[in-house]
Image (cartoon, rainbow, N blue to C red; front, top):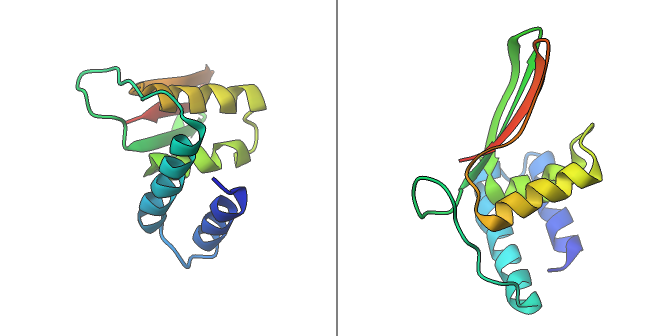
Length: 122
């Protein structure tokens, strides 16, 4: 998948010219083309049902209060995860691996006396 196409879609979202819901199917299609060209193995799913995760949820708390509760299509989350401040490259890669493996539920949960981040696949 050409990275410039991915970047362009993310830029359109950041400019408000596309919503996250509109960008999701576009990024899914770009990801499907990449998967076919790299001949990745089929994705497996884990969790209560056999359907793959459709959304990435990011929750941030400060002093025990919710500050961010964001739900985005999985394809947009996959594309943008490396651009989130404070998330290391290793953590970004682990999140991408969890998405590719079809894991549902919490994939990152950090709590430090009321300050925390939770990322889950729904």
